[in-house]
Length: 246
Image (cartoon, rainbow, N blue to C red; front, side):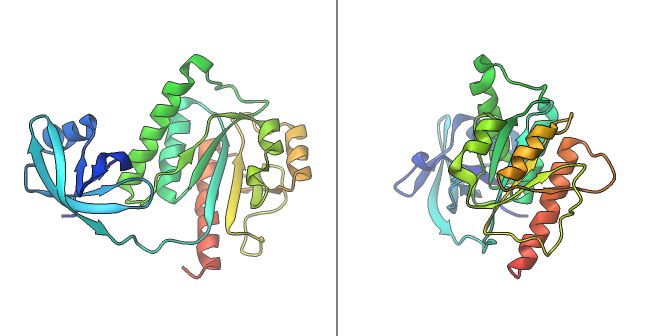
C-alpha cells in the first residue's frame, strides 16, 4: 500500500521535522487512524517531497526523520487555463480535474456573458476554498507542485496584460474552423481560454484574434464549459507530450 500523502507549508518544516497543520493532524489521527511510527509522505507544493515517521506530541502531530525524495521527471511545457467563471460546483470540478490533468495555473475570467460573478466581500473566502481544492487534488494525483490560481480578472484587462504574451495562446470557440492537431505551433508555455455557459461575444473573439490567439473548435457538439475545458486540456497535454517525446 502506498504511503499516505499530506500537504505541508514550507514554513512548517524546520530542523528535519515537519509540524502538520491542525486540519491535517486531525485527518491523520482521527480519520485515517495512523499512529506513531507509521511512515508518511509530505509535499510542500513548491516541488519538494519528503518521507518520515509520525511522532505524537499531545494535540500536535510531527513528522520526524525526514528524508528528501527525488522528484519524478516531469514534462517541460507549462499549461495555463484561463476559464470564465461558471456555476461554483462546476468551476470547482474543473479546478480539481484540471489539476489532475497537469494544469499549472488557473486564471478565472469575467466575460460579457459571465453570470456567476463573485461579490467582493466573498472573494477571499472563495479563493481560500479554491486553493484548498487545488492542494487536495495535487495530493491525490501525486503532483510535486500545487497550481497557482489568480483573482478573477476582467476579459479586457486580461487581454491587455503582458504576463501571458510570450506563450502559445488558444481560444475555444464553437464557430472556429481549426481543430487541435499535431501541426499547431506550440511554445514551452500554452494558454487555453474557455468561455462561460453563454459562450463568447463576437467582439471578445475578435479581440482575442487581434491579440494573437488562435481560435479552435472541439467539433460539432455543443459542450458544457467544464467539459470543453477538460477535453481540450487532455488533447493539448497529449500533443505536448508527443512534441517533447514523453
